[in-house]
Structure formats: structure tokens, C-alpha cells
Length: 254
Image 1: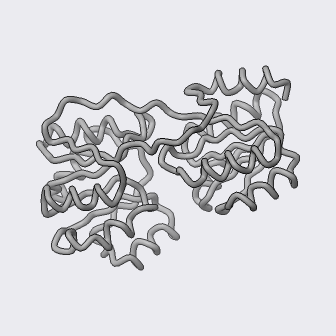
Image 2: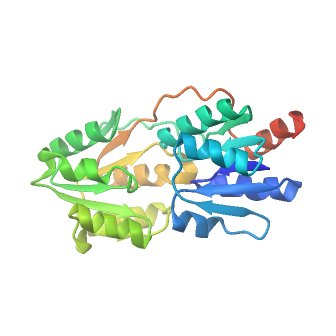
């Protein structure tokens, strides 16, 4: 059986393609909502976060022969756990990495190393900050003292658990946008205008993650953009297409 860590749309598509090729596939997602999106008659689904030890147990339980790590480009801990567990279990590990987009020339684009640096930079650039970075790092923005006098809007998945977390962090309902992306240029522009955003914070999550339409909408409106750069991690084998992943699995005679 092949384990696909499918925290993204393209990860789910890879899982389906593998199943259609004839492989038994187990899809692992962190959230219930991710599991819901991954539902397919030919896929087995498991939901819940896994540490390295839990992942090792899962590999043995399901007799996993290969891990396809199609987790989000910024889900560093997920990938590190998968690399460690695969090595311990002696199974094949491969990384599917959606391509980053080339960054445009724009004098209001600021590239930073992580969410903490993004929070500090955003506070210097405007009073209304629109976050499009997902829910995992929202606590960093909410606890950044430089942002206490700013209005911070968070666009997150329409997952009840995520929304509950946002409310616990102190976001008011009027500062939450709960929608499933990716979003068009027109919709991004309309949202940024509706909230009178000064600064947009995003990640280079690739075209399928909608970063291109966020950038072009922000540039059209003359907004500052803070972009969190991709983390650096030694994955080993990295593939950027479903076909390459399938070919590697076939070559490994799995």
C-alpha cells in the first residue's frame, strides 16, 4: 500500500491517479475537513495529526511500501516526520513539491523568512493587515505586540474547528473570512478593497495555491505584500508532476 500525505489539492489528485493506476492508496490528512475533501471510492482515508512515532506505527499497520509526501510546501514538521519514519521503516520516501511562482518586480513586495518576521514587517507597513497564510501560524500574528494597534483579518478554511481556534485566539467574527480557495484575481481584489487592506501577507504556495492572483490583485491596488519564503529542507527525491511520481513508483517495482 502507498501512503499519500495529502494536505493539498494536488496531493489529493495524486492519490486518485495512483489508485486509478491500480495501487492501494491510504490518504492521510491532518483535519476532518481535509479528509472530507479527499473522499473517493478508491481511497482509504485516515484523519489526524501524526508525530514520527505515530507515523512509524501507521507504516507497519498498513504495510506501507512508499510514502508520497504531498503535504503543503510550508508543512515542515509533517515532512520531517515522514522522512524520519520512512528511513526507520525502510520504505521509499518521495516528495511531491508544487513549483513556486517567479516573483514579480514590485517595490512594495517584501520577502521574509518566517511568520514571526512577517508579523513584524506587516506592522511597519500599514494599519489593516489581511492574512492569507492559513490557520497554522495565526497565533504568531495575534501575539505580536507590534500588531496590537492594527486590524488583522484572517482568511481561513471554512472548517468549524479552524474557526473555533480563530475565535479562541481573539479574532472577531467580522475579521474572519472562511472560504475555500484558490481565489480569482477579481475576488481577491474585491476582498482586499472590502476590508480596506493596507498589507497582504501570503506564502509562495505556487499557482495552484493562488499566490499569483493574490499578488496581482494587491499590486493592482498598490498594497504592500509580505511574502513568507519557502522553508529549506533536504527532501532527497523531489518531483513536480504526478507523472513523475507514478514513474518513480513503477521503477521501484512497487
